[in-house]
Length: 265
Image 1 (cartoon, rainbow, N blue to C red):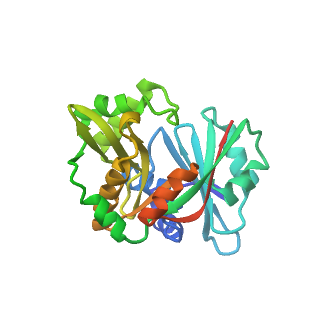
Image 2: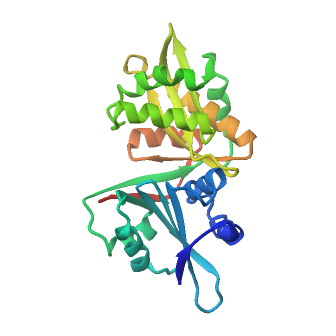
Image 3: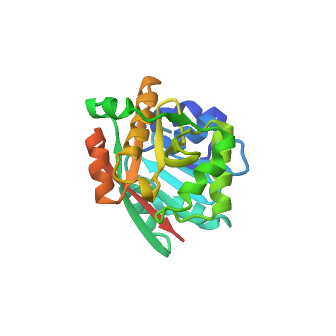
């Protein structure tokens, strides 16, 4: 049986999600930060008929859907919920779960990325975090300077206005943080987190100005992020599809834990 979830379902929901907190960091973060009663966010759960146990969950966050299950689940039922939504733009999640849902959807584009987490701080992270460069924590007043850098990065395909609104909202709500290195009044390297929860956070928007690459600046900012998060008891996670980026993250101690698939309608 699939039904809408509410505050009364928080305990069984978190119990299910805590089985795999890294994979579920988006759902955990959204529930911790926004609860259940939001117009931009909905949650459904599938309960087993024999014992009533919650075994799968589906999140809608604006036009994006994210399913999770710890075993067999009603993929067709989840797909039907997505198709009924007028806001349906994409579905993402662990490759195995998304593949099951994809069989019941018409997909326009697919993208797959490796998913990695940092379980413990390595000596490499400590060394990079102790860089001589001054690494600053961004406030809302730094949004334009940071986005002026990320606007120049080819891999970041987004509307400039949207990227500024998104970063501003993240900083204002405390659902993420951004660190950066500045030189002569210009941001030359940056990295952010999103979907921060009590257990984990996703590292995103890692960028270095083209004129300053090859100096390890982005690694230093990421190392500082990781050090601060681990001190707070949070596990840093990230996606990557660039082999060169993968080498850098592995050197810092990140370990691949699976594949993350994104399907666009």
